[in-house]
Amino acid sequence: MVYFFYGDDNFSISRELKKKGSAETLSATKDLSDKDLRSRFTDLLAGQSLFATQKTVIVRNFLKLVKDYSECEQYLARVVKAPPADVTLIFAEGEDPDKRLKFFKFLQKETNATEFKIPSGKDLEAWIKNYLSDFGFEIESSALGLLMTRLGNAEQESLYDLWQVTQNLEKLMLLKDREKRIVAADIQELVRPNISQNIFALTNMFAEGKGREAMSLLEKMMAEGPAADLKSQTIQIIGGLASQIRSLLLVKDIEAESPAKIASVLGWKEGRVWINSKLAKKFTKEKLIALLKDLRALDLRLKSSEEPPKLLLSLFLQKAKA
Image (cartoon, rainbow, N blue to C red):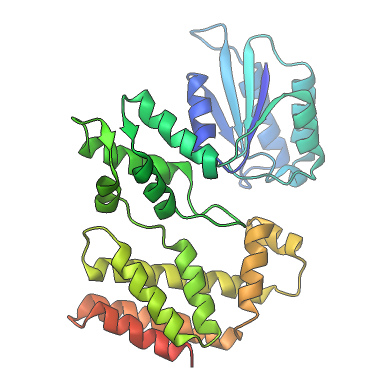
């Protein structure tokens, strides 16, 4: 039997692999030549287990390197067409693979292929309810709505993954181990808002010189958090801004290329390329470098002094919009 698991939902792929039991895994790597990697595949797929007649072999992330491993591609294609009777072979791709690849289309057609997508909207709500139900918990509608808001949402890409969702659910279940019922106050206390969406909006505002709107959003971001001190929230916002600006610099360096080419080079989805390219056009490269330098100085100043965190961020925003 041959399976092909792919998609952006790494959490569900990992759970599905665990269901298959113990397995021997080979991850594709550029450290091996085409011939050496082919030899390893042969050893894994042809060798007999000492303690069992049936074994599972997982091939991870081969599609990322398939263009450089033509001999391996041909060998694996033959195995897929006629798999050993004592082997369960699983191809697992940790991120969305390039669906234009010939080998991707081959695996889709010739294997038991399943795409795992990160759920959103009503699908995510149902997923959360089912996850909690498996452990004997339930969640009130108002609490679920607040949790969805704090996880964040965007049209172009998910701002969360199921690893983050389950981490929050595990914390909530630990808190409500006796009651087995999660209410809105529990979300307010334990779940931090996903700042990614607000960080993008904040960057866009100071790019357009909207200082007042940026300050208003900053106030909202710092007021929404659970019982945590302002300094830790400020450090998180600084880190988010720095990450966003680094992304814009990456796009800026190759913005003359097509979105598909940029996505391929950076390993991003085209949706992420599109929204970052649009924002990057509002900055010069020199401005982005200066902003990143200012954020590093702000981070050091915040960690080494007792100056009010909100004041320091406000000063940065005033300078950033100039």
